[in-house]
Length: 167
Image (cartoon, rainbow, N blue to C red; front, side):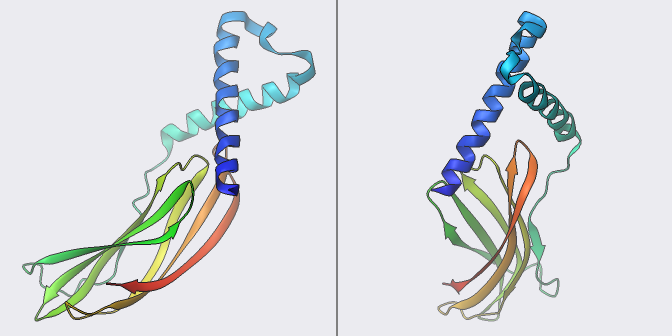
């Protein structure tokens, strides 16, 4: 429930920023209510800075290479795991395996957030897993950081560790 509340707060600030931009273009300084003038100017300035800095930011892939020692000519298989399932968003993880001599060898993994992710950013840090047989199971441990952002500014970094079984 806290995740939903955080996302709604982010949306309210975004809509207030858009209201201020459109109002400032149409009405000029009269859009600023004397009671909330300082807050309105603060939201407007921070919003403009975030828009400018977002244009310069690089896209993170959240991809981790586990091994390079495999035959690239072999078939591969991708397993999907959902380490965290919340009301508003999910953390998904894909592990790619190379099929070699009746054994699946982990090659790489990537992870992402899906759902209503307003105000959140996921950084995938590490994964540990092992080889397994085609009808077997593999244990995994994955680490990452869930960043709680308010209008694009990082407010809190929540470290997360997931353990489970890949079937």
